[in-house]
Image (cartoon, rainbow, N blue to C red; front, side, top):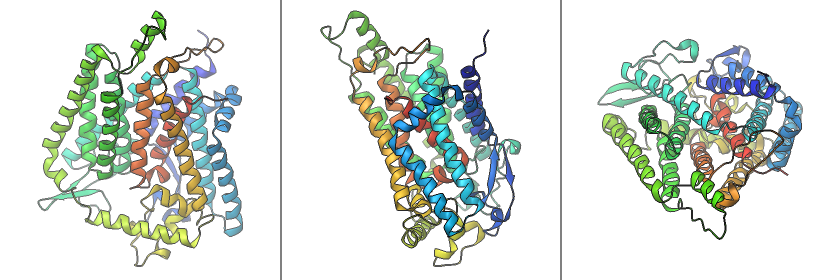
Length: 476
């Protein structure tokens, strides 16, 4: 059997996805690593296994370099972002260059490479279902790890795979207090419960997408179990932002299926073969409504089971006046001051944490020196207002084009795509709905946290989803 570079690239890509769930890395310790007074991931330079696997996946599609460049160049917002990063880098040479500036620039270029690599692979091959099956299983595994951690109230011995040392008595660990007792939240193998919750949100919607598809009964049973596990897992993170994002996402996803999922096909507009294909791939209609009803039933049951199991713990999170919420507001006030002080190019990519105390009204302890807890405000503080606006343009332009695809009639969406001997996968409205819902959830999460900007796993997840969206956008 002939081994083609693209097939090798696919293998490394799926290994890359696996490595995101188990963040093995090497930290290059330097002065910036402890510049806050203690070691901080936010001021450190690390090489992850996922970086190496992404590079290998990219190397094996270099033969499609022209196609990759075409995808990137066709998105004007990405081009503007790249040139703004270069301009900001040159400004830092003038203002005071640091290794964190260089690392930030390299990381952003890597994310753009991930974006292009994902778009090329998913334009070329039928990877959608295998990818989301794989992702859902890995999310389920992380959920089981988080459940075990919460039950045992200690790590389960996966420190070699990224698990943190988490105990109720350790300062700086994410916890909640119930009836005077302190409990750690579920971490999985992630640096914090909040980024884990972002992955589990994708896992929940990926599982719902798989359940909506035409699958065998035993597959539906497995997906239903996986859905319950992922819902339980996301509950153990006790992330209020994740609960809000999931709630909004479920309204959008389920609402679309319920009220806009009936595809009407007229014999005057389509041949009998086209009708057959549209019925096969379109959103639920007629006989398929029963299956969608079962999916809603699985979802409702999963949420209710999770609520009744964790009810005492969930009630403690029903507040916005706790110390964590107040700290978020304080960090964001610091961010506003940074933007006012350096509105054009910001304080420098990757350097906002170093300036937190400078713009704070009070002394910050080393563990309190954290990034601004709002993605867009953090981007404005480090890249300037224009840099943040370009990032917003990137997000809005992709989501807008995806929603345009979602509104297209099924007949237009299901036109066959033929390309010189390569197998290309037709998309259907439910897939566009999946991507749009996931990204909408991300936008909600960005309003309350920084991890899509600062942490390796969620940085990669964000640009991976953008790449999946780019694969669905027509290039000239």
